[in-house]
Length: 211
Image (tube, rainbow, N blue to C red; front, side, top):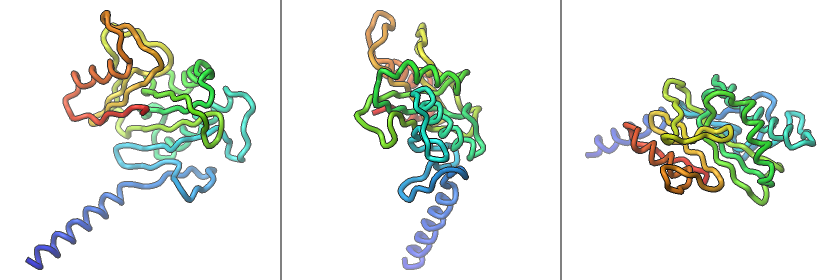
């Protein structure tokens, strides 16, 4: 019995070591060190990017919202590229806006970074972000072959986000303000894509939303 317990402990330890070896922090060279969080984490199949604000490498910040949004996305891009990926690998973004009236401008800037098959996106209006006026976090998948955009039948896309993006085990769904007409029913966009994803996927899905 004692040998069995020792064997199980050694086996558990080896699994933990193997798992930790697959996860590494990502910090581009010009990023300021942060003792409380990593700019990004490479977890093997996925890369997770912490919320990025509008500051440049030297700590300065542009005055216009368009340039602030563009810099936040450039910071996300730098972390993604530090893992050997590109913006094409991004499957989900979450945007925090202090002023939701900047939504249209933010949407336009997103189109510059994701011109084809954009990621799913949640946009939240909030009272405050650490570095005003915008913060963006993201998820990227390593294998592009696993990435595919989905949308409800007869759905007319608006803006620069895919209604949903699927991988082999992740369902990333856009969350939009308001409702949309679909087959004579008035339902939240997120629910429409979630329903579609469940109908089409062949593997278990983890639901990702902006809430």
